[in-house]
Image 1 (cartoon, rainbow, N blue to C red):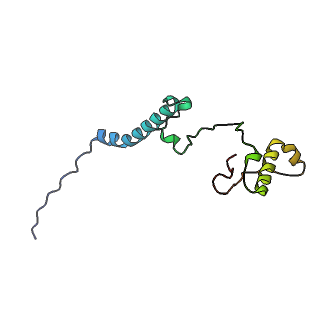
Image 2 (cartoon, rainbow, N blue to C red):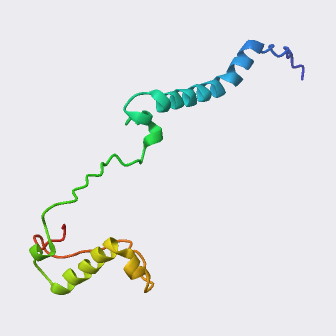
Image 3 (cartoon, one colour):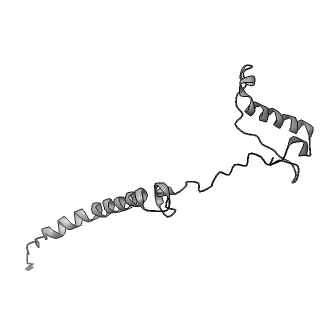
Length: 124
């Protein structure tokens, strides 16, 4: 069994590549976070940096509130069930005069669900 073999020493690793490799990922991560925060603070798109392409704004509503206090529609204009009109009238009265209802222990309604066919005045 006369087998010949050679033993070679391990090649010495390059220290520069080791340091560069271990710092590359954290540097990219920090650079990305810096870029995101800079875009959010003053990156344009409106006040407060509301840039629609900013990933930090994902899931935020872009809707605008439009108030129309006087629509000209009254309860007399609403067609449909008188009982529903009465219940809705009570909700509106409560919102206009909450102290009157607070004396008897009423709480603010969280919402009103209206149902019915189109054209029956659900969107006062």
